[in-house]
Image (cartoon, rainbow, N blue to C red; front, side):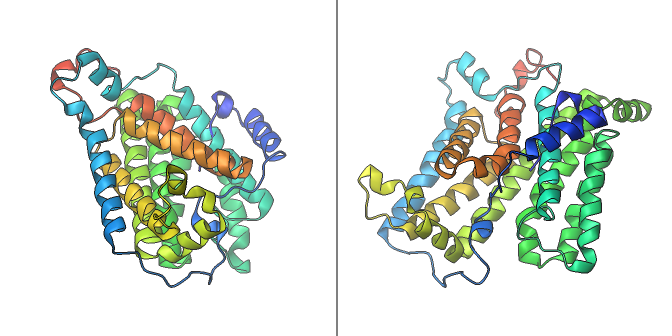
Length: 341
């Protein structure tokens, strides 16, 4: 969950823009736990039948083909380059937008009296600290993006201390790696961060590449955790959500009515797990990123504007990865031709 914009390094325009956007924002939901109340988790197990086996094998095969497609020897070189090589613009405008979205997200939480996420409940004695942390992050972002990243990293680690482990786990990777990426992208966005980076003898373009790797790994870990924890290990809550919104299960529209909502939860869990592993291993290419963009666009169209606000950070991260992510398949012999970093 994140915000960005070119004028972010100037505090007043930044805060004004955030507040203006917030006036028209609706509640945003991105996790199943935000939709389903605590305690309404049906005690169910994933199916182990021929349909489940077919879903598993088919999903594994399709994602394996998508990941290995760029390694086909007969693949035309321009197509391989287009699918794997990073495209880096001199001005990191997408990163500015990411920071703006982060600020808007924090501001939404302040207006709604929430701390980072709807189901992260701070006790009354700590509620004020949650307000201070989020408000300070918005203000400090204009002074130092990297310093704000450090604060987000520390806050994400603190989640494990102040909230139940399995609740905090759903958010740790997301906030931790966003914070880490802000530390390294800071010199490309903020003069103060650039001066500090330069004084340390570091190269801001190399740090920008590190930031890209960090958000890729972070998104991968987040999808992996959500797929395993909230779908494969505990499918009840996801099933309750699908039962309430059965239009998400598109298989009956494909003339496959035998694939039940529980089978669909299995399909989603396996898909999130595989995509997460591909991102972590740097095997994802623009086919995978485009697929993720299509999935989140579909959920936005199905769920409306309230879903868009919550998913805007993920949209932005995916666009960054689509352009700058590259892939481990990139040929070493071509590195001098594509030395954007």
